[in-house]
Image (cartoon, rainbow, N blue to C red):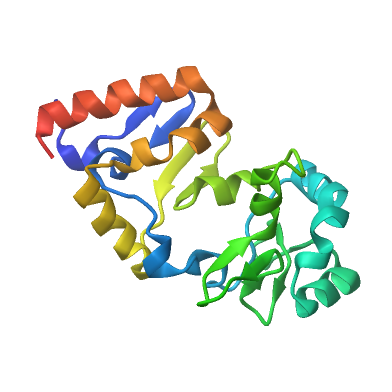
Length: 200
């Protein structure tokens, strides 16, 4: 077998980082307070189709958004093209996604996802948000699936380890949404075979 450093999980037309098998992960919102929705210098990557969908459901959630977010949307729309040429959700004050709302105690949540969970809209949230902390990079012949590791998700790694939940297991729903159930089943088989081989 190849050296571990060279191994990638090849699933269909994707190359998947070994982090999905090796890393433990389970979001710990009580600790991080949803900081991934407010940290960073750009909004969440979205497709043109998702932009149109967000504009469609906007009237349902508009009154729940922060006043500054409403002004940003009124003036510049729900999305913009960032410095790298990607279409991303609009942000407020250089950091907050316009769809971020706050609860008592400082915990933030996504207005889109909340409305979806309440059955008021039929759109969960952008796929890039649903997949986080995974990042997808599209190449001509394949899609790279990588784990974006940063300090605010350290608590999620610790909780995942305590609960025995691997990254690929935690993200079952989002991965099936993006790549399909058959792809995810193949991913599970590859991850389990890798873990059995290396005992991580």
